[in-house]
Image (cartoon, rainbow, N blue to C red):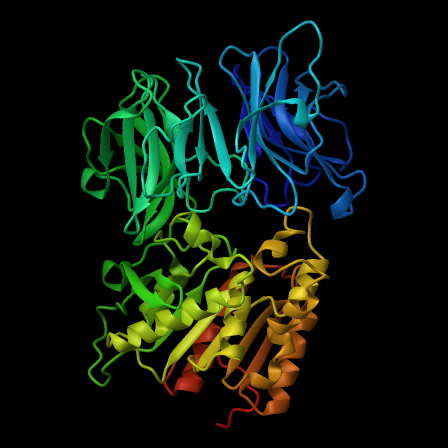
Length: 589
């Protein structure tokens, strides 16, 4: 739970010992084959550990988060050396900054590279790559400001995902200094090893620890993944014989790879077999195995779900671009798809626009039953990558700077209007939904614009002030960049808060909320609901017992989908067969 979002909770030691953070206590544990887990760190919930590497010898190097003083402003993040034998004597290697990520020890064990940054930056805003020696008679200073600055001397560059080349010992990393997350090599000052107008590093780099969008094969070649037109592309090339990447070869779906994949690793025994996480729109994601030489369809080794949907009910997403106030915005369009039915009475289908969470994140074209649910029932879906989304370069990602509640709302509205113009959506049946940050965009679009005719907010942010004043350390200054400094610019927070503009709401809204949500307290949904009741607008509030910020119980996830469908069926006037009804306030039978 480091940074609350966690990631890289397990580390495989050089001797095949598995080290992992136990979720309940956050203690670091170790597990040997045919043995019971043993604690490595002290009892108690003070420390959290993540993103570790085996430094060789008797220690691990990890990110440690100290919650001795649990208030967000007092939580301390550091890079530490942790003895494998369970000793309490941890050694601090890097300290003095607000956040740390990706500690990586050089192949010869003499140097430690890591990423660090300070408030109010988020990791996609501005970070630093630092380097410190692990050898010498005198212990080096643990103060990060005393360590060598490898990248981001201008203070306005995001540097992520450092990794050492196993053969040459060179240090490689991602940097967005050219405008896109490209791969750079330490010591090379004239740009990336391969200049591309595509972001590498994964769909939403920076949110989770342990993210690694490129790696090295046993023969020294670099393997990286990027997305083009909604599909993942594997890029291989030589980085050992030149300062730039040479002999570049790319592979995609035509070579047997799934539509989306990431986290590529090589088989330690050969360079022909690759493993990765991946998936397609038609089947649940999982772990895949693929042969570089054979280039036949990748084999799925395991999956978290056995769910299967008939091919005739699968809608394959199409990447779309559409005009918006800041130029061009992006998204994925899913047409209605169900071979069991044929519509003969409508010129265009109802449309559901989806606003992803984050907001510095991105839509995915992987298997999403929550989208196929709608397309198999006659809805078209537009999953919008509004300005501020990742994967389209730094300038696009930075469109949301001080513009959250403006650019995102403009773009979801522009996407809906574009599809209407193209004859792909019925202008009288335009709905929008989103959860968390996407719920904020949803409520904002319904409060400040007159494009949509219905909407559904799932645990959506209605009050920006509440979000700014009560959240964990990692995101406690996030809104400084998205909206403005709080409380200095309190007026902007009120101006863009849907909860402060209930008088402008004028279309039916369904509110779905968990009663134990600490991020968006239930009273925000209750206030919105009361305002809609008073205005006589059709509405309903469903409060799910025991749910927090995001629904986790299968029965509640299913009920939320069915409830949204039923709500739209009543508003748009169609029959939602097989769906349990419920009372909708201010809507006559």
